[in-house]
Every structure is written in structure tokens, then in C-alpha cells.
Image 1: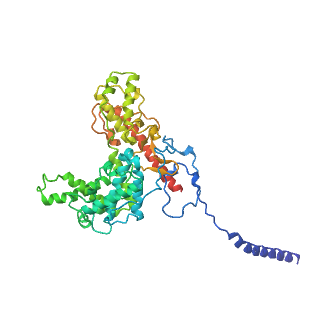
Image 2: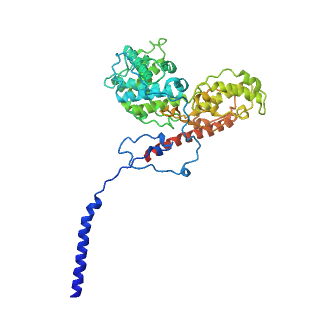
Image 3: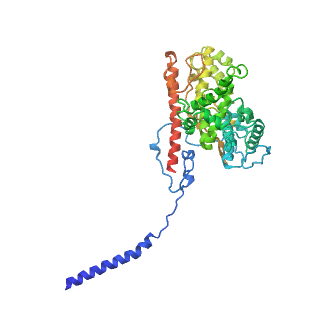
Amino acid sequence: MGCYRDANYYRGSLCCRVILFVIWLPLFLDVTAQEIYADRRRITSLVVLAQEPTSGDSGLFEPIEISPAVIPKVPFPTGSVPPMYPALNFSTRYEPVLTGKCPVNFSLPEISDILDKTAFDCSGPLASVVWNVICCPQFSSLMHIFQGFFGMKSNNLVLSNAVADHCFSDIVSILASRGANSTIPTLCSIKSSNFTGGSCPVKDDSTFERTVNTSKLVEACRTVDPLKECCRPVCQPAIMDAALQISGRQMAINNDNMAGEMNHADYLNDCKGVVYSYLSKQLSFEAANKAYRILSACKVNKVCPLNFKEPSDVIAVCRNVAAPSPTCCSSLNTYIAGLQKQMLITNKQAIICAAQFGSKLRGGGVMTNVYELCDVDLKDFSLQGAAYGIQGCLLRSLPGDVIFDNSTGISFTCDLSDNIAAPWPSSSSFTSLSLCAPVLQRCHCQHCQFHSQLKTLVVILLERDSMRLYFHFLSVLLY
């Protein structure tokens, strides 16, 4: 009987506990998930390269701290570079005076955003020192995208001459009202006729799509790889092939009747503009702008944009030196100081400029590596000086934009800020120089030492650019 009472006691006690648990459970579940936003003041300079997530809820997790020990030891500047100019007040925009004859709503977000980007990249006095690498490539991209945007709701790929003049004038006026240099057309050698298709015989979607394999063209340029396109191009040959097809159509119709009146190169250049217009209608503005900037980077990084005057004074005092010479180095530094007043250049352009100038010196009889004797570095060929607030800045070979901040002003992302020696050429003959690895491997014996130097530099450049891309995508994933 006692055992029975004990069993009932424990069974009742268990039932009470179950009832209490059922009452307590809703109270436990009645909680609210608190959203934690990332403190942007904690974001490091690596994360500055990242963009905001394009989809989903943002800021649900705080940033993941990465120990410096896990970051590969590839030297490149991690801090923000000083502004080249005092802060410009971009908030004081003014309303531009437009022609009223360009049938485009420039206030639409998609076109206004790219106008803003171009205005920053070509801002005020800055345009004259970044025109080759940043301003003109972005302005050219804007022109291609606007041409496609204009014909988005029609069958046209070009603008008529009269409308092209009005729209071009409005674009320049709007850019100037947002802080851009008003002389951009002159700096970049771009005119309103770029909108018209010129002498290209194909100027509408229907004819273009009957002539060109458009799916192949769009697919080739939809996503352009910034690390491969310049040496193993995909989009560039697709554009050239399409331009050849539509330009050759008129030549086939007229046979030799046009000979002497217009050469085929003119047709080709005009038709490339039509191809860009078609692509701009098929791609998003962001994708098109990114692709066009990469293609421009491939082009500008093939040549040195600096103007070299005859280095007769340097040759005269450096011809017979075999050891460090104050007279030779002083003359060389004076000459290079003149180059440093011209413009900002990229790391790859600096290699070509160093080789080109060295070839001039060798052609004059300077056989000793005066770069080594006088401690000449790659960054010495780019714009610098106290007036600009920097002491040597090489821009990355990948496309870059002007960075503007209300507190710090205008700045750039510099690469190779450490002292990397300029390569001394092994020959006085200089025609062109390719920085693609397969070309560098096929060198003649007398040039092997020089090409070996270049291969080392190219590896460094590619590692730095790819590392920046790595951190960019890593930052996007983390945030």
C-alpha cells in the first residue's frame, strides 16, 4: 500500500512539472531577434574596395576579424593615400543650361549615376593629370552607353547629326555642372560625330542582328575578366569580328567603287562604335561600363603616354660612367623631374616608359645601367611632388576611379608605392613591348636578362592586382 502511495506521489509530481514546463515554454519563446548592424568605423581599408550587397538583408552579422598572419605577404599599400588636391565641394552643383533639343531625361537614375561617376573621374584640374588612365576611358564608356541608351526604345543604333550635336553639348554641360573639366572633349579627342556611326553602313538593330552572330558577341562581352582579357582576349576579338562583318557589308556592295574615297579603316572604327552601341542596349549599364573600362585599360597599358624630349644633356654626362657619378645622376634626376610633371601613369605603363627612355639613352651611347647607379625606381616616372601631396604614385593597371571624400578630398588607389627598380633595357632599339607572359618567354638570348626582369615585375603586378580582387570578393562575402 505504501509503494502505491509513493508511485502516485511521483506520478503527480511529474505531471505538475510537465504542466509548469508547458506554461513556461511560451514565455521562453516570446523573444525578439535583434538585428546587429556592422559598425562601419571598424571596416578596414581592405573592405573599402567592397560594394554593398545587392540582394538580401544587409548588416545581419558583424565583420569577421582577420588576423594579419593569414594574409599573404604581397607588399602593397594598405592605407589610403593622401588626397592629391584639397577637398572640392561637389555639393555646390549648379543647374546646367541645356539645349532642350536632346530628347533624353538626364535625371533618370541609370543615366544620372554614370554621369556622376564620369564627373568625379574627370573633375576640375584633375582631368589634365588622369586623362589617359581614368578620365578619358570613363568618358568614352559614357559615350558608348549613352548611344545605346538613346536607342533603347527604337530600332536605331546611332543618332542623327543634329540630335548628336545637341545631346553631346548637353552631356558636356551636365558634367561641367557636376564639377567636371569642361575641356574633356579636347582632352579625350571625342566629338559629337561619335554618336552618328559615321560611314558605317549598318545603323539599326534589324540589319545588325541579320549580319552578326549577336548571341556570341553578347556572351563574349557580358563578363570580361580583368586579369585575362588583355593577354588572352575574348571580348575584344568579338567586337572586332562584328565590326568587320558590318563594315565589310558596304565594301562588298560597292566593290571597288569606294576605293580612294574612304579607306576601310574608317569604316571599321565607325562600325566599332555601332557594335558598342548594340552591346550597351543588351547589357546593364554597370556591366557595360565595367567591360568598356577593362578594354580601355588593355589599350592604355600597351604604350607609354609620356612625352620624352631629347635627353642630350643626360647622354653627354652619362655616356662613359661606370660607377655612381654625381654629375650624371644630377642630370638624370633633373630630366626625370620634368617627366614627373606630366601625368599619373599605371604600373605597367611605367615599365614601358622606363624601357623606352632607357633605349633612348642606350642609343646615345649610355651603356651602363644608370637606373641602378642613380637609384631610379618605377614610381619616378609618374606624377609627383609636394604640390600634389604625393611622393610617387603608380596607378594600378586594372581600371580605377577617383575616390572622393568630404573630409579628405580626392585620392587614388596607388600601387607599387615601395621602391621597385626601373628595368634597364638590353638594346637601344625600342618598337613595342608586350607584358604578357607567353610573349616574354619567347625572347632572344641578348634580351633574356631584360625580359627576366620584366617577367619578375609582371608577376608582381599580377599578384598585386589579383590580390586586390581577392580582397574585394572576400570583403563582399564577409559583408
